[in-house]
Amino acid sequence: MLEKLIYGVRQLGLVLTPQQTQQFQLYYEELIEWNNRINLTAITDYEEVQLKHFLDSLTLVPVIHRMTHAEGRLTLLDVGTGAGMPGLPLRIALPEVKVTLMDSVAKKTAFLQHLIDKLCLDYVNILTGRAEEMAHRPDYREKFDIVVSRAVTKLPTVVELTLPFCRVGGIAIAQKKGDIEEELSNAAKAMDILGGKTREIIKIELQLLEPRLIIVMEKVAATPTRYPRRAGMPEKRPL
Image 1: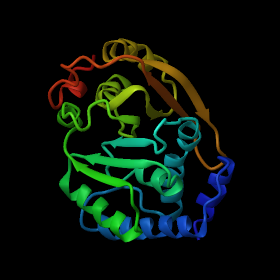
Image 2 (image 1 turned 45 degrees about the vertical axis):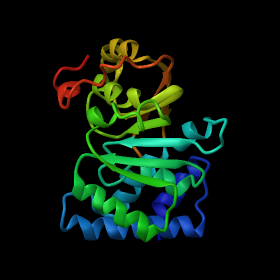
Image 3 (image 1 turned 30 degrees about the horizontal axis):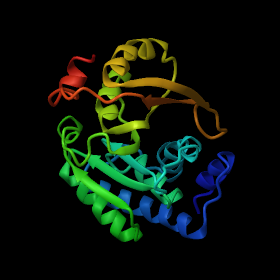
């Protein structure tokens, strides 16, 4: 059961407990069942889900392990989480992290609520709403230690949709593949405007996955109140 995932996480220096393994197995089963009713993922093959969803999400664990919080429990927000990646696999693997999963599609957040109940997970919060709007709410603005987004969009857009949620001193993480020099160059202005800077770029090379890049952005100053701009603008007109 979950041989590929178990092998892959060992390369990351992780060992899943029997309970965590069972939770990932149940996650897969519920994902496939619900995917017959609502569009959650195009990837449904058992091995592909283990690698391209679960293991890919867990490549962020080494970065998160380096973060600490004075009050103990780290807070993590997953923007545009969809079927729960990467936030929910991270919560399963890192029970000490408090995770918030945000998506604008109510059917997807209904699936996530069902799933966390089924998995008996605590310290998970589900939010339905667009990042452009939720980031202006006092309860969420600049409140999180770590903000992640797996959405396939250009880096300047990711910057505008994640950094406003980050506390000063926190980090935003984007996962990318391939040549990102041009994207990084284009995102430099957005980071500067929004109070961030590139802290490091980590190359992940595992036997079972294509090489990945993790861009870690540090929040060094408060985001000006006008950002993020209204819904759709960060994607239509990147900074």
